[in-house]
Image 1 (cartoon, rainbow, N blue to C red):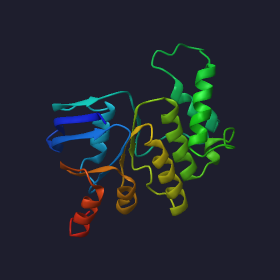
Image 2: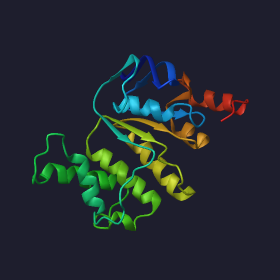
Image 3: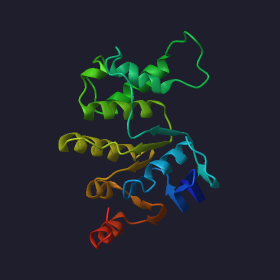
Image 4: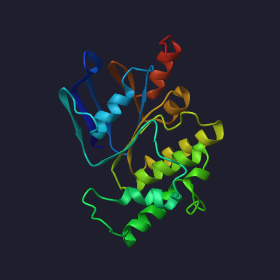
Length: 225
């Protein structure tokens, strides 16, 4: 199994404040890697570096394929008249889009498949403002799926979800890692480490774990989150 993501000697600072440093780890393709650690430890910064939203001051990030990035908070006006299907189809658009272009049959099929995988069949024509928090979160992930990116980076997609919605999200992630590389930051430590194939503890510096269970044991031994 080849490496899909490689962080090599990466460092990034916001002004005089170093967000992350000494970052060296790799992620195997078609696996799920969990990023855990305290607030302000640098998890979101790592995901932005992976997605190319930020550029490292030192080192480099190597990726095998495109990255679909779902930030911690997705801001848009839920009163805007857009349906789930239309939201997901936006993921099929390319940067070289021309004015007044139309979605092709391939894009429509990709969106339909993504909606089905996200467990939103039957919600295609529902307005996004009518969705629950969990349903909206899965719709945004479906948009990332529709882009056909090889790597999906998720920043706390389980934040503020109730137990039932979180379980549906974890079931979705379990299926996605069969054909995508998933990197997800979360504060629900037990749940995400039970799902993950590998883990990274992030608190300015990083420590990679081939066994998420080992990290879980260390956290129980007294590492404060």
